[in-house]
Image (cartoon, rainbow, N blue to C red):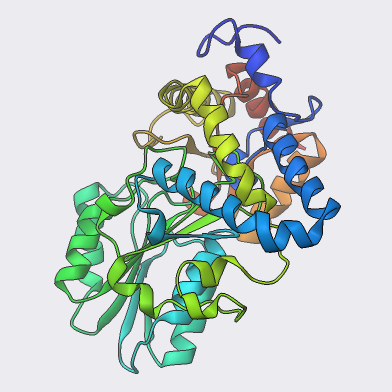
Length: 389
């Protein structure tokens, strides 16, 4: 290791902030994130306090610490703390919204075919419970922002009760025009839920400015908080309707505390989130975002060159730390099962990335500040060898 031309001479020191296995190539930050040592140490300290004096912790210390963490995360998202609740992840946030909405038979729930699988399941359950119907609009991978807006508009009608849109799509690494789609949905009389799983940290997020009714995001991805750290933001006019799926002692206080205080849950991951925000802030959020955007774009081109697929058709949306690289046409990726099999072969070679059946088979590359250009050369060679085996 040494200098990173996209970061500088201090890159090796930055890389050592993460306790990642050097024997493994980590090009899949987008799936699970990676937690820096200092954040893990902070979480461990909170846990030590919890187990040393449980009565003191749960009865007298924890409530105030949650309020402090709440304030720090809300400020990072440019939101009011009272409009935000901690949740374990976006799947939990979506489930809370789906559990709380009162749709009628004949109403419709609109989403795109880029939707995350777990979110799609939650919408299926919402429709099964209420008698509403799913409407899935198909968005071509190369669609422009204006085309995306028009496609969502075509799926909306007077029957639309809810529109769900990804801020950054997981499977396809697309950045959708959330504000414009939200405006279209509201004109149709529908509520809007934004899946912002990848947005915090990757993008400079101003949640209220999106104009949505509900927004949920993960902090364990690009913010590098511990796993189990997510956020649900709810517009004030909806908060009285939002209910925790688990009823506990803070039920009388309503949103957000009814969602956050459920028995003796270990909330140390939430309490450590401000440490992650400060750590990346000390490195420089804009510096980190610029590095990640430039690196994944360069990595995308490098892998495409090694695979012999060329740069034609490559798409990298502005500001994103993820991008797709189509696999060669003869790669044999015709299904999700095929994609998972190739991904497992690569993992057996010590290479972690995502393989998706989109585009007839593609890699989803991620970049964070612990990555460097040589990682994508190694990735490209590994994929080429795995396909030839």
